[in-house]
Image (cartoon, rainbow, N blue to C red):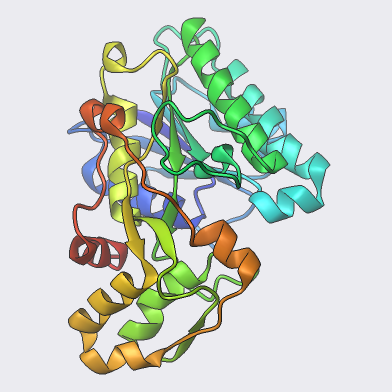
Length: 314
């Protein structure tokens, strides 16, 4: 019986991952038991293979409920994002760092070490990025969120060395297209562009049209998470950590592609009112080179058209 656990299952990426696991399983292996962890759930899941465990992953009793019985794979997506973690250091550390330790240590002693895929972040690089980022770029987190995620990568690698798990960390860029208005998220404009222009609604973007970001669709992000869970551990690098490949596109390029898809008049619905802080954080990304990740089997969307298709597929 294949048992998979997903933390942060109610999140944007988590919900897409859950759909894929129920539909396609793990590379041909049907998922017979899928345990979802999050603070709360809107209602009971329709699939009887799903078990929902509501509560904080910081609580050992909640983790014990989720891990009851043998576990074949864990996707650890739960986190307190950057701004919220900065405002509440104790909460950020509890979820982003201490709970990662707990999730790993609780898996000690299984007859077969489970796969453990950890959702890290491009925030590990910090704010002062070099002219080009590659797989040798030294991380320099500028927020506790990034520091704790970087520490989590090291913990996953060490737990793998100790034989507790078969771990792999993936650094996620901006994943689109998150539904809703993204209240409180400074990067919300990246997803809102897709939904607003598709619905012929105006949008004010807090960056310039030539602002450059790293983009990946939620569908391709999930592809990469599933690959990391099922890849041969002997093919992984010593760090057991990879930067997800991305498309590097200007906002204007994404807008133009959306206008081609939904109607040329949609481009005129976009108003640009750059905010220097948001521009610096989310629209000044340098070229990114990821040949090691690509040899491992990770992918980007391939084209802006494919990005739009896969970002809006759900």
